[in-house]
Length: 388
Image (tube, rainbow, N blue to C red; front, side, top):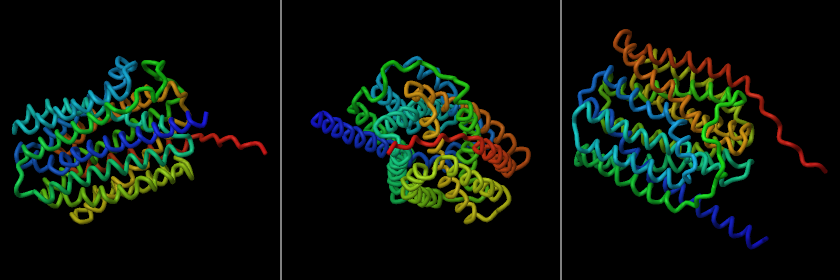
């Protein structure tokens, strides 16, 4: 028994290292995309706010269908499915490198989005399957740190070679890094989660989780779609300034993600989420009402830092869900998240055109207020005490 436990521990460490390495390389490529896309969209594609809204809505549409996609593929081992997903992501970035026109960019955005949205619940499920109940928040935080480190590496590359590398070369580099990630995922063992998982889960007892992930999709999408774009379009933020902002942002998150994960384990997801949402109300209002670019940089970083609290949504689901329900419930959460994510860019783009970018951020503040009130309804059952 001792030898068997030791072998399991060795396999667990090996799989953790593989997942962490895959996350690092994936987000190194994604960091390049994040640092370059808004300047690429404005300076090369000449994208208008309404066009950006349409692109983001279509890019998020695969997330809307994710519960159904994963239901079809539920009996495929997570590492195999994850590898295929990351190959799609790599192919989308390759497509970016080959065009400077709006329509193909929309198509390739949908391609890589399918890959990313299939991968997200798989990464969470594989990480949660590797560890005991009392350290799941910590481990999700560690994966967030590896993602932040990878993103920072990608952004640093852009900062160093801003003047000498074309957008086409950047996207080919991003594609290559994601392909390395896909290869690593292939070597993760394929029996991490129960083989008899249900294909799809939609249960009333997970209703609060679904509602919060829906609202999180609204909140997140406002910043993802319009925050940096507003700084570039309205305040002429340069590629170097955007890349530096994202570097600072990701280094901060790299350090904070494990701390937030441990905090969730220590005081619970309810307290962490309530504190985060209360602060986010002021972040959104600040972004709508303040017109000083350095202050907007700070608010952007605060939003990203507070986003780390959403690990609490995953640990909350893990706490209340049956083990067989975890992967399909996470994928249903992705779908609920993207019901909002498809609509928000379209609505936000047209609101921008009619009322200015501030209207989208005021709407985001309203969403956060609703989220805060829902989190107050979380019922966290105390862990059973050991008998003396």
